[in-house]
Length: 182
Image (cartoon, rainbow, N blue to C red; front, side, top):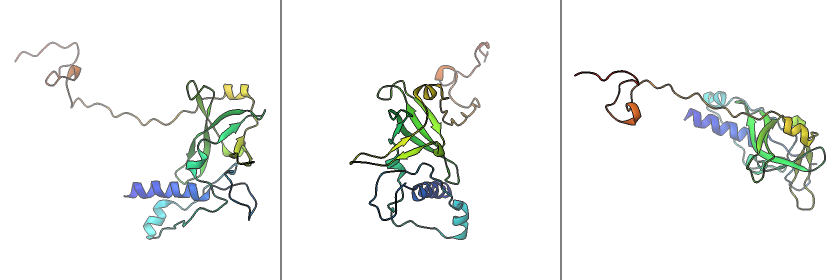
């Protein structure tokens, strides 16, 4: 229950606090802010106090992460270099980086790089097109960027309680040891 509450609060904080680059009173657009920052109170503190803050609806100056994924990213020459494939945020909800899928063809041969939000400029939506993000990097600089490594939790150590060698039950002697004489 606590884990679900923490995840829900983090996602809620992420979607509620991300802002758009537009003027007040203008119609909603799909232009994300270049450096959204989420600063919500820790979910555990809200749970301990027995209080929860609810967001009733999305405002014109807010952005949903589900719509943000796939946003085109342009290079210094205004040509598409990739798109947003994920968003990296910490346990407080602060966005650390936008993960960008670059290169390749239809996802084959592409690599992912992670870039801090302040590195982007927002190109507002025009003539029905979606908003875009722009980096001041060249194609060569993108190619030289280090790949983003997703976290892989450590694999549990085997304790010997399970199937024997080769997955066959009852064959539990270690490799290279003589068979037991019963």
